[in-house]
Image (cartoon, rainbow, N blue to C red; front, side):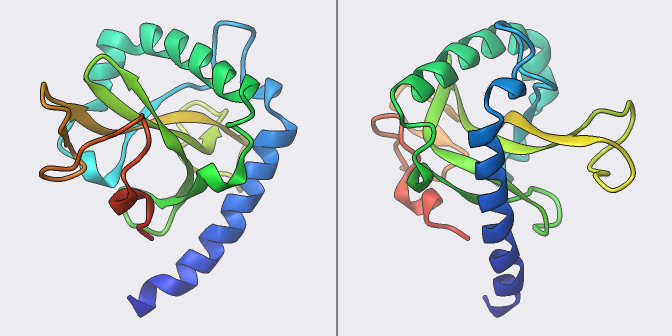
Length: 175
């Protein structure tokens, strides 16, 4: 789609900036050993029908603890800073905002998530206002889908299976 290309070029630049920030500020993205600064669960464009607020209320603290261990394991294995495992993904509202998404999938119970690096605001009540207040890049989770007993993930589409905790090519390749 020709109208997507100007945004995509900008997303590639912003993605590189987000990756460099993460690489150089990794430890500052945590609040001690047991918290991620401004941790949130968002939904990806494929999962608009799910209420991430309910997932966060019911499982947020447990998800965050498992996620911290998972991120640290990805870091220690040298996978986290492999640039080939990161790329921009469009936001779920207007498709004019991006987050940096990780290819390796994080699973908590039946929920399938993509690790994301995106802006969060440090001012109460402020959303994506990086020009008018202090905003920082941080780790988030994007809900990609919910896995059924046959390893099919709703959100990715019919008959799409997640293998080896890697995002399927049909989703990884999208712009």
